[in-house]
Length: 467
Ligand code: FAD
Ligand code: NAD
Image 1 (cartoon, rainbow, N blue to C red):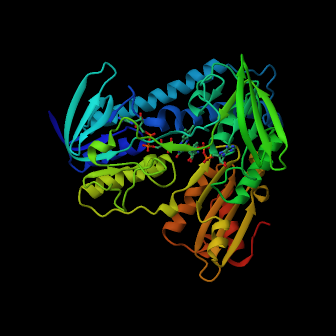
Image 2 (image 1 turned 135 degrees about the vertical axis):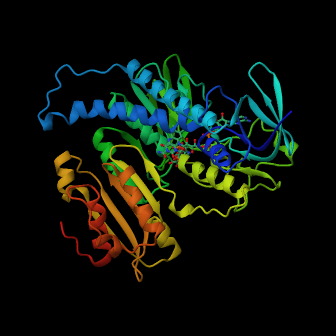
Image 3 (image 1 turned 90 degrees about the horizontal axis):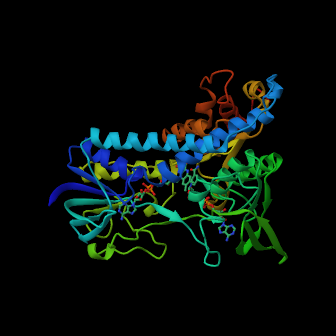
């Protein structure tokens, strides 16, 4: 039987980073993946394919709606959806291959098959042919990720009533895509198909969209997406869906108790994700999942069984690839006897719509709830020369700072390139910068980053220079 110091179960961003960092620290490592490709949800059916389709559809949208203003004619413009999807598949494959290469480079043994505990230190890998290989290990890292949440009254047939996984592999552009859930997946995949000509209706239970982010970002994104043509039914509860041939009828009820009926050719259910632990035989290792399906861990990401760790979507916290990656490196370093640290308050969140929305630290609602005295500086992109030059005028940067000390407590951006801009907020907050610190740093002109500086000037002393 092969013996390892570390066995990682699951090859998503949590698992493969944990394996690489463990190998870098000199450990003998194996990684187990139940599918025949590495990379997990993020690489195969999450971050990477969704961003590939978001980028392709954004190019088309710009050619259709924005090029003319720049003096570029696009007569006879069209798109080939099959080619778009083929390109997306190629992007995914390049990432799969890249991860496989990294496993080889770091001398990590890869086993394809379902990993399940035989005992605390023994793991069986059952491959697609039913063949079983047993591995002995000193430490185990569970990184088995998550799967889409199902609504008990709404069966998913994966053909007409679908999850994000099927929405990324459709053979045609939907005529009318009804999306249940106005969270991150709803607005991202809704944007893809809206840009390609689908009618999109988002049904959201709450009175706002992207509820995990600051309310101001949700309001601005709602305004801009409505302007782009996306329909939203807020404060509306879905009650069921029935399929007849190619038609799905979704029934719902709004806050006034009025019944609503929508007919579409596809219905995407995007109401969150739940931790995935099926097939692990946790009980054989003396472990159980909690009432929400998560594996409980302590501050060192160690489970109730010494030597077994868990990371990423399968444990508490934001279900984000970069959070899983941080935990992957963290846990390898803990196993190696180091004392790493993760600042969970500084894990940024991004919605890759256009404009993008990005957030780090406390939201205004959280500061109010905690009774923290704060100041707010908000600067609109439309006041920037750079934004006028590109024509991306929507959105703003909002900086929240402590009323007394001026320390930055939260940064919330919606606008062009917000996904990249947010890192300035992360760095500022990691080093506990005040808003004045940032406002006294030179920001290149003309760039979108100037909105960050201006928002800090407003937060510090209400003295924007360009507004
Ligand atoms: P996963 O990536 O889910 O990987 C778990 C792996 O474990 C899987 O490959 C699974 O097959 C394997 N596995 C499970 N059980 C076993 C077993 N018993 N034996 C062997 N293998 C097993 N996050 C972002 O930060 N940015 C984004 O842009 C983004 N976009 C997303 C878009 C979509 C449509 C979706 C669905 C998610 C997106 N996410 C994004 C979230 C991100 O994908 C997850 O947070 C991330 O993949 C979690 O990583 P993980 O390593 O914990 O688990
Ligand atoms: P989410 O939690 O972001 O949003 C789910 C939405 O569905 C919420 O707004 C919720 O109020 C709504 N909802 C729940 N039940 C409902 C019901 N019965 N009827 C109508 N609405 C209902 O979840 P998601 O969009 O499914 O995404 C899942 C996870 O994947 C998230 O944790 C997210 O962080 C991650 N993800 C991240 C990215 C990114 O980082 N860009 C992209 C996609 C997914």
